Length: 436
Image (spheres, helix red, strand yellow):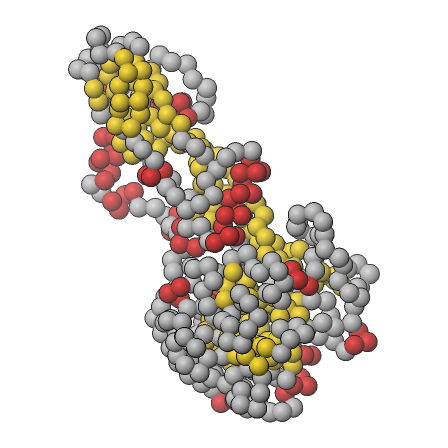
């Protein structure tokens, strides 16, 4: 079997308290975290799938536990000039001309980690933004700097022009819809779409438009043309002075050049910068507060389950539990918290003493594989656990840092567990926490 390359080091064992697992632990595990109940307490089967698009509070199914969908929380549309050049047209120099503009503002499309578009989920976010606003927006990772800076324009009379390219910059925030159990008013339980982990911000833009505007032109307020006219500095000496035909440096351009000499004064705030990649520095082993008992992460109705790697550069794979599994198929839930009915925990492996994690070096990649590493205070090692109704042990797992759901490509011995930004829509992201 070819092993994936990756930065995860061989996981060290944590404190002695974690190794004192006995055969009696299985009886405590299910009760400790409320993942299942006795058969008599089991709730009725989950409601059938909703026919409409997922929205907060509507019904979902067990197959949805390993999936998520975006919803748009806020939007803001801002007319923005991306390229500009002041251009003086004299008598005799009218007619069609090609003007090479200079970059005024750069807009980069992003939705998710590191200022990029995170897989299918990020594209879905941007698609929903466009649909909500009735605009055609970019849904792939790109930038206005990839657009041509040349504007061909027919100048039919002498004047001072602002030649521009501009667009509508669209920004805002999004949330994640996840399927989880919710207690109803009558005390029963049902699966519903809730706001889960994995919210963030997005940036995109519409198709660029180009043109030329004069100081004497009347333009709609808050339009792209109006933004260009502001850059034209119509009241400045540069606009009023006589010039030979051609480019005229505007006050805005002069200010930009001045700021370029002092980068510290124009550096973006921390909130404006893309989220930094998680550190790839090996973490110091951390003592965890683990719940008693251990689990297998099974595939419901099938024999394979999650098995931690023996080799440092390998990942967590689907394996069949046997006498020789050496507890690599046994997991404990540690540092468990609960918020809005959703558990969050570190997954500690009994066999190698490491915690499940997405390798830092590939955390921003769709289908990055899962492995184990020394347990640490690291969001790459924290997982939200979405649960079926009481009486069922079925769950979906989501990485806290990346927001991606865990799943696998195909049912086969040795298949890697991977992350999927939108989850596995065919139900293969639904697992079962089975007490052992």
